[in-house]
Amino acid sequence: MMSRSFKKTPVCKDPCSKWMKRQASKAVRRYDADLNAGGGYRKVFCSWNLCDYRFIQTKQQAALEWERDIAYRRHTLEQALMNWHKYYRRK
Image 1 (tube, one colour):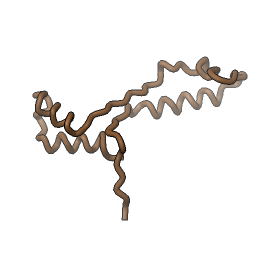
Image 2 (cartoon, rainbow, N blue to C red):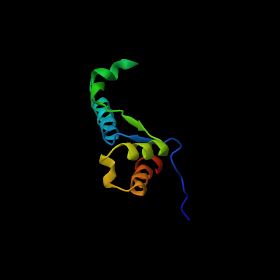
Image 3 (cartoon, rainbow, N blue to C red):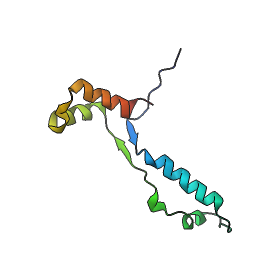
């Protein structure tokens, strides 16, 4: 039987952030010169290239946004809430 685990907070993260962080780690590991203790890794990989976006939205906010915005009306309220569950609630 599978466990039914959910996210503790309704957060949707940027999908490219995990890939970019992995690229930064690779660049630091492959750097041949000596890195100083502390923030020496910043000189190897530009921190502006990392995207750490997080979007927080509750179920009530999703329902209000569906009511307010006409662009969301191409879906029913049930479909909009299922999309919220897909991106914000399920792991």
